[in-house]
Image (cartoon, rainbow, N blue to C red; front, side):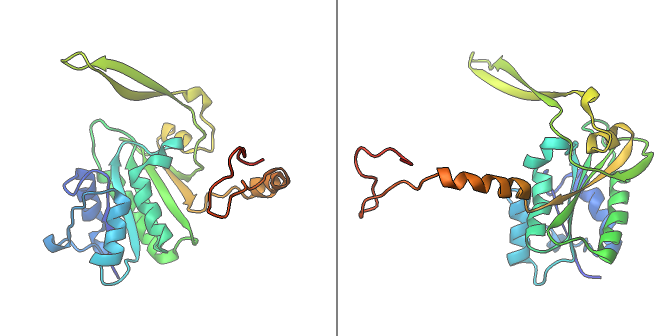
Length: 240
């Protein structure tokens, strides 16, 4: 069957990782103590270490999660859980990121079971080169599953200023969601409908239509002149 590499953003003892390991064990996860490694780095760091040092051969699949809390819309851009799967994709290994869209009353069993089902499908069918799957599972009752696109930013950042016991300020970041702006084909829409969201994400973030259009700017952009020693001549403004 080959091996499946698991990583997460919450530590080696996280309940979400344990649930994922138990659900995926029949597909190729080896539940042996010597096969568990804690890395003092990001999930992407853990994947790099596994692929280039710890594993003798490349895994057939990498699954990152299960994260407590959704990775929807713009939040997936800086998600450690998603980054672990993206790192695997960069190395040519099919990958899935899995998140449970709640931080309360955590029950990872449903998300883990679906992750195993999806993993079996990926092992059978594969994924397009450079593409990973970002999965978000609603809490409680699940009414269906759909493929979605990444939502536009519909959140509002909120900064709370507080003081520590010594009177020094510190800041706590929060956000609110404008649910009235949810687009029907987006990842947020699936979760609000109590459906599992699967969003294909690509490693190549180049916007090719803009690349073609913006190339016309080159005629107005100049390279700064440098002296023979590599320094800009005195009095010369950058670009002119």
